[in-house]
Image 1 (cartoon, helix red, strand yellow):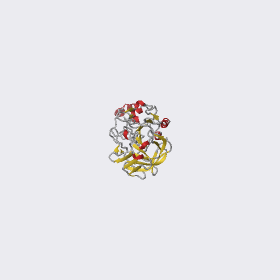
Image 2 (cartoon, rainbow, N blue to C red; image 1 turned 180 degrees about the horizontal axis):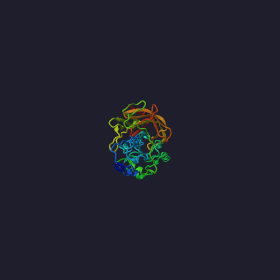
Image 3 (spheres, rainbow, N blue to C red; image 1 turned 90 degrees about the vertical axis):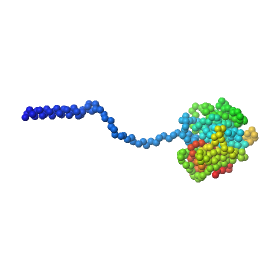
Image 4 (cartoon, one colour; image 1 turned 120 degrees about the horizontal axis):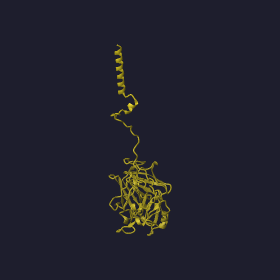
Length: 354
């Protein structure tokens, strides 16, 4: 009996040792154990951060196609609009175009580039004092032109802009054969941009834009498909007709579609009619016609044509360097369609819309 008990205790002791050896209860054993990957699916917490908005051009509200242009300085080119100057080059590529009345009852165009290039651009013509108030709100833009009288030239040289006119930068201009002078001077945006000073930067936004699919809105909004502006002496009659197929306004001059040298029609997404008074500068051109200047500082009536509609409101510019603001009858900023905009500096009583 005693021997049988001793053998039983020994057997239990051996079994206990085997269990301890197989159980891996020590820390060293746990460290040496092979990890088995789990097959259970894992779920990540949903993100609440929206993707960054695409950078847009300050003068069109469109996504920037070339990132190198995002902070590019604005470039203004004065473009001839006399009948002998047509067809022109570079108007379709412009972000914004101003049409201003000049001497002799005709108009001149002020094309502003920032988001795209144009090669060639022109015919390039002379500066006017009206240009200064527009250029002054664009953060020291480049200004391409073909000279001016002594008074206007002094204004240009003393204004917050970079003079890249033909007198200072003749190497980036050229005369084109087959056109009568002075309607034959051309340049290119790439050539003019090559003269930009170091540190030049982008202009401020000139307008507020709606989302691409957002419909037009504004206090007093009404349908409109046709605009006509008759400048002095009916020598310049400008017409825009709404093109629902392209979502733009087809431009006509004196009964003829306004096309460029490649046959492309000027068709901006927006047309602004900024009703302004003109005063006589006391100067005359070589033919003896008085030289007018638009009064662009102050406030007045303005119309926005966009998306087949018209919204009437006001424009306001307290100083030469201030950006002109536009608002509807309730005082809310206009919201333009992303894309190009033409601004008509129309004398009172010259514009009609229907």
